[in-house]
Length: 72
Image 1 (cartoon, one colour):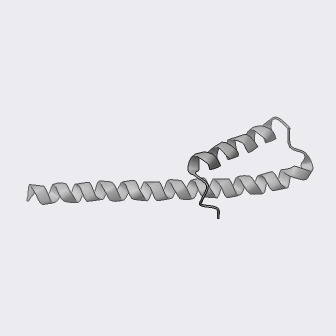
Image 2: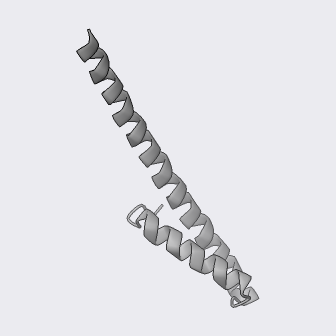
Image 3: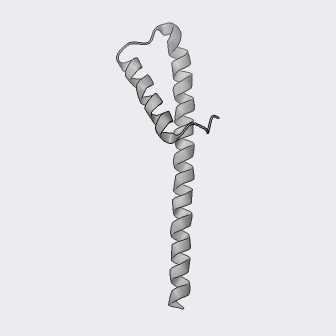
């Protein structure tokens, strides 16, 4: 998976593909490739969101632990 692509770049490209499909700008010959690319972009976005959620949860847990230590 191409994790070098930022969430924003992947999301914007995904939006562009969706717009092309909705507007009928993609030929039947291109459709399969575009859908495969969209699936990859969705995986990238999902992975980045999952990583970010884990990071935020860890930060919050660390803050809670610090607060508990201060209260003791």
